[in-house]
Amino acid sequence: MKCVAFVLEFASPTKIAQIHLYGAQAIKVEAVEEGLDPTVQMLRMVVEEYGWYPCPSFGPFNPYQVEGPKTISYELIEQLNWDSPDWVMIPVGSACLLTGVWKGFVDFHEMDYIDSFPKLAAIQSTGCAPLVRAFKARKDPFEIEPWKHPNTVAGGLADVLPWDGDAALVALEKGGTAEAVSDEEILRAQKLLASTEGIFAEPSGVTSLAGLFKLVDRSVIDKDETVVVLITGSGLKDPAAVMKTFEGAPTIKPSIQELEKILNSDGNLGLP
Ligand SMILES: Cc1ncc(COP(=O)(O)O)c(C=O)c1O
Image 1 (spheres, rainbow, N blue to C red):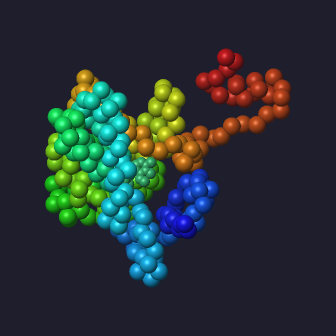
Image 2: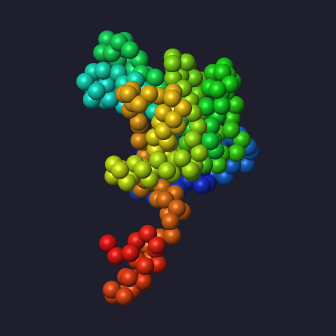
Image 3: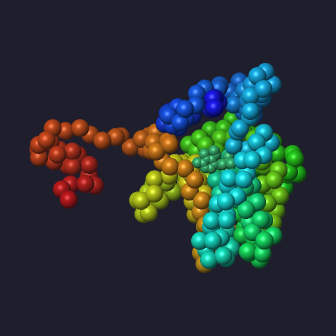
């Protein structure tokens, strides 16, 4: 099966390498009109022109997508001994992930595996937060406005329009919330998760954790509540985000003098 993947022009080169290795052809598409996703524009064109099968990771063009993330909820209910958590923190771009997670809980509720629903927290970046803006303005689910200029370290969440935002807003109305976090908060959460848990997540994938800190700080979430934080992407998909935060590794010859020069040049280090 041939596959062409349209990606945003700032897509991480390592993500593109992965697409290539799996056998697809990645093509970067430049944004030409504000508030319009150029990859979706291309998708519509090739469907119309060539009859290609559309397979993006959101509902309106691909109703099967939601069937994947719903199994996250099945797994987490099982792993919590068939009990619901109080909260699930979810990074949001197109909002298909959140919608799928909600669908999983609805399924389990219908099958009587759970009798209460967890609250969902939709977390976006302040550099692209159309769903958070719509939630806070209590917008009608069909009146979500696109974000004009996405600019965020969380590249995976830079969807100008949350295509599944209508379903997501309905899910959030059942007691959930939506919040945006800055690049700085995302990178702080990324470092904390790596240094305390040994999990290297990409910025998009750790936005959920940054959101948890914010919502605990604001007393929306209580420290005693059971919270599941979805960490959704490996840091190896976007190492450039980390490389920007430090100067890189110095190179030395194998010599103690050279080593000490480096160790002493950094006030915090010195000989261990
Ligand atoms: C790592 C990561 N986490 C979360 C999401 C959000 O998923 P959705 O676009 O379904 O909201 C994405 C989207 O691509 C992603 O790349």
